[in-house]
Amino acid sequence: MASILIIDDEKAIRNVLKDILSNEGYTVEEAVDGEDGLKKFKAGNFDTVLCDIKMPKLDGIEFLQKAKEIHSETPIIIISGHGNIETAVDAVKKGAFDYIAKPPDLNRLLITLRNALERTSLVKETKVLKKKIAGIQEIIGTSEPLLQRMPEY
Image (tube, rainbow, N blue to C red; front, side):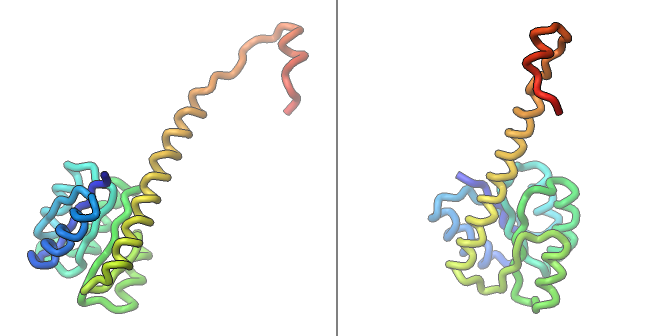
């Protein structure tokens, strides 16, 4: 199943999210702040990230910007109890997949996660298909029968 990294400095929020997502069948790893989250993000291979905005050491927007430099295709969902419309727009402009206010609506959270994971799956599939297409060999030759069969471009 999909692997999700939860980054939040509030232990209660991490525990609730971990319980909910684990019950949905996801593999969940936790980080206590942005710095810890960045270390785990670099070391792991996560399908998506749930990240709080207001955290010590490295806030959510700083994490988002650094994480996008490492694995630009990984969707990062920002969650916050301190935000407003401007914060949400800023996060999305800087590359967040979506923004969810705390306390999160469970249905909205799960739908957003499914959409993010579907995007991750499509990105991986696209990469595989591009590699397969790139591996197709061109026919090399100039014999008369070959030239007769080649379409004009």
